[in-house]
Image 1: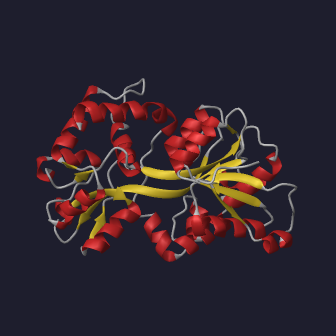
Image 2: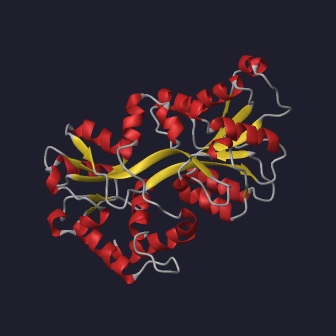
Image 3: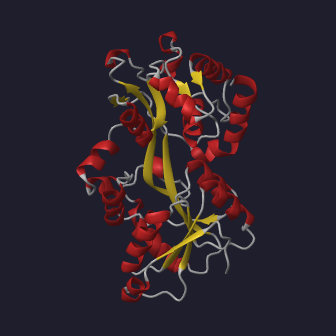
Amino acid sequence: MTFPATLRLATAASALALAAATVQADPLVIYSPQGGDRAVWIAEQAAAAGHEIEILNAGGGELFDRLLAERANPQADVVFGLVDASMATLKAEGLFQAYVPAWADGLPEVYKGADGMVHKFWQTPIVIAYNADALAAEDAPKAWEDLTDPAYKGRYVIGSVAWQTTRAYLAGILARFLDENGDVTQEGWDFMADFYANGIVVNDGDAKTAAFQSGEAVIDLNWFGGAFRQADSLGYAVTLVDTTGGTPFIAEGIAIMDGTDQLDDAKAFVDWFGSAAFMSAYAAQFGQAPVHPDAIAASPTEVQEKALLVQPQDIDWDAIAPKLDGWLQKIELEIR
């Protein structure tokens, strides 16, 4: 099969593939936004464990669109690394098949689908963090709902709805205001209007950075690593808030494509990929926090400490994913 130039191929070294305990007739084709050194490292580790794979890498949005376009003639055997809403939508479109991997036992319920099609393996909390040099702990917000307090007016930044981080925390906020049909209540939209009115709304990263450089903003709504990176860049001490009701997590999932002609090999790869042994090795290599308690326990101490700093919000992404674009459009047209 042929692939466009935008998809970059990462394959295991042939020597490792020859040394593998088992050899497949054809490599598993895997679509993932994980690229560069990470993709090469994953493929090398997979080959050493007996899994011959080709990781075809592109941006998450491009892969999402490609998977939908290929639904009549799937080219991938396995997909991993797309975030919750994307995986939920692809599942709803019938692209995946059920498989409960060996490592599903002990996996927190928030990271596995009830239908057994998508299981999560890495976590990225979307946090409320604050400049501890400018804001005392007792004065910091304790929950996402606290942000509309007049005390925080002009003290936090709301980014573009095109940013994955912004989309995640907006979804997390609106998920707290759903009726029995899963629609946002008027109370929720009123809260969202107050949330925007109370914050500093920006369209680009430079404007966000400027708000913190000036000292105007002291509360950072950011992904976990981004909060620490910004604090290091601007030279302030950062503290994360373990919010009441939990914080939204972007969790990356793995699934087997419906229609793969290498089902047994795909199952074996998924079992290996999400295992505590490989997840903890990945954590040691790249500092990424896994979600399985066994993998966290086997990870370096620094990763363990970061993985337990905040508790995840329970979000039903299967229910939210089909509605999220409409909610964001309403925010753009009527609130922002």
